[in-house]
Image (cartoon, rainbow, N blue to C red; front, side, top):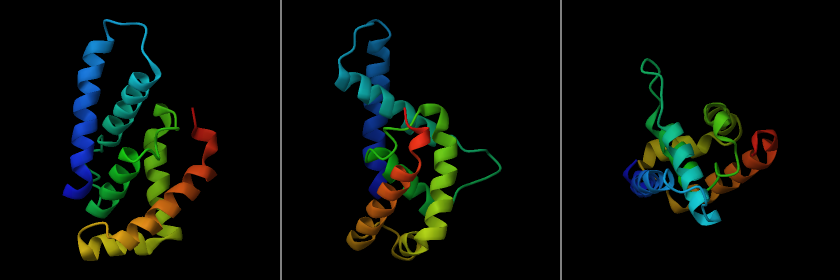
Length: 131
């Protein structure tokens, strides 16, 4: 979790800072808008029902995907569906990704390659949720 959470903390800190600044400006450059959009998505993935905790390996994959841009093209209103479908997709099509993270307690280099391939396929399949 520490491996993927560090980047997420930075993204969220930048998001909060930009959000505070952006409320006073209506004209945002594309880079700032992209950072605000990513921050909104990352903040959305952190919401979990209190009675349905997520496995650590699932959280790690979701955070990895969000902080590495795999969620950027999806509309914010689909984030919870995206998260649920992503976990189900990996469980069905690449369960070794979760198993390896659980066993090794980190995302290994070879597991990261498999994860990236799986995330890219998932992203391509779910184009209906894109902005």
